[in-house]
Image (cartoon, rainbow, N blue to C red):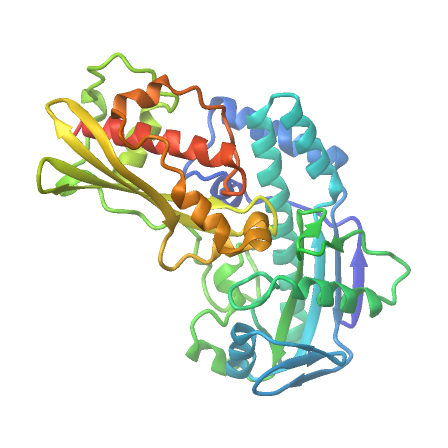
Amino acid sequence: MKEFFNDNPQVKIDSAEYVRLLGYPIGHELQDRAKELSHLTERWYAKHGKPWVYVRKANSFDLSENEFIIDQIPFQSDAVLKRFHNGKANDVFLLAVSAGPECEAHANVLWKEGKPDEYFFMEMYGSAVVENLVMQTSAQLCAWADDNNMAVLPHYSPGYNQWDILDQLKLISLINNGNSTSNSLLVESLDSGMLKPKKSLLAIFGVTNQGSQLTAYPGMIPCEKCALRNCQYRRKPYRFRNAKRQEKVTNGHTMDENNINISKQVNYSLGLKVLKKWSEERLTLSPLEGNTIKASFIYDGTTCSNFGFPLQFEYSITLHENGDNFTILEQGCKPTTNDIGYQKMCQYIKQGDNLLETVQKEKSMVGQALDSVFDENISFSPSGCYCEKSGRDYKWHQVFQVVHFALNNK
């Protein structure tokens, strides 16, 4: 296989993968309104979506200690270099895929029409389409490699860990210049490195004739990240991606769903099942000296562009307890220790650490009673990133509600 372009790929989204992207836990089945939105989104995209796939084998590939060179264009990435050296890569395939501009445009219309749920389902469906296209292409490359006694390494993209997102500009130029088909690729890279349409992906696949050695290095076999069912070339089982479970509330005790205490007349914007689940899985309460309590909440989100790169932030709140009342002494929010997803946010690319400083300085509830969170009029914001203040305010509003709920049911 040298090169191919497909402007009508058969997209078949795995329901479990779509549910994962929507943020539900493993094994969850969509019900009621969520199920209806899923079907509406799928039907709309089947009618209006125009996905496409382009892949070609590099004309030349060279690997040194400090860089890898594809068709005379040098790239630097410690992560890719390590992968290529460990896998003894001797060739490279270039990939460009897109869910098309239609779902992005339609999602924007839904948002402007005041339909945040429909917007969110459409956004995540676009991400699911891109994942599916990458998975299908990976399977095709595996078939080609198998026929040629070779093996394919997992794909990697600019913007991933230790590969500068600005290399999207070089990679898309490389792909376009080597495109010998008569089909123009309807994707471009902005100066920030973000792609337009945003539900698109550029990637490279390393190829090796030393496939038997890949098992010696973790993460070197693409099968572990490929959900394609009944694949005859599968070498290792698929490892379903899922957010790590956090410690449970105070001393590991869970709450009885039939004995939830809502003693105060408060109006939670989150459902009770969500409050219970998040307080058990994402929240940790720790008693401190002087009738104070530290609350730590882990939030998992995704960037709104760059293929929805995952990110994780930790919320820290210190409260003073006085009977049934709690006063907020301190609040803070920052990326977790091992998170790199925040670096892929468009505003971080523009502002750098200034964005994180802004996020850390936002302490709207310090000095106030925890109950006062229900007096705030916070607009709904479905964004999973931290680029806009409205999205950050909404996340804080949710976190304070979970803490309130947990403290009243500890």
